[in-house]
Amino acid sequence: MEIPNNSESILDRAIDFAKQAHYGIKRKACNLPYIVHPLEVMSIAASMTEDTDVLTAALLHDVAEDTEHTLQEIYEMFGEKVGDLVSSETEDKMGHVDPSETWLRRKEMSLEVLRTSPDINVKILWLSDKLSNLRSFYINYQKRGEDLWNSFNQKDPKMHHWYHTRVAELTSELSHTFAWKEYTYLIKKLFEDDKDGEH
Image (cartoon, rainbow, N blue to C red; front, side):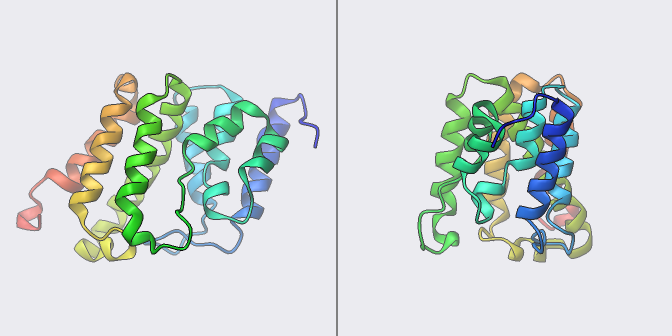
């Protein structure tokens, strides 16, 4: 499929593609349609860059990992840069092994991609995605408390703390941005504040 030259139409197509790919899927820990997440990720990324390819990748970042669509489709429809950015955030699901058993290995492998990437756009995409996730975690923690963690494959909040702290370290080139500052603030609020002895 030919990619339009008009950058706005590329974003429009990415929104439509993401809506179709995630249709009928709900976010973990809440009852919102999944498309809310990639739209929020795009919005966060837009606070750090005007690069249309990065914003397109933000919209599509979970498509290959969580739907029936493939990375190859993204490369063909949206180009190499978008495909490479989406690939940087696409975890190897490790076949049919229980995802709760592979959580740590998958996170270690994906963090290595982030650690070794010289591309600031990869860091923008990662930070945008993880900030969106932590916003959702924090909102739902206020409603559910520690029961929140039972919604996930990894049920130990200490492991989530480790993972997000590592992401913050590896995206520290963006420490001047409001997104990074909000991300580290939410890490502190979710995992480090006492919460009256709940942690």
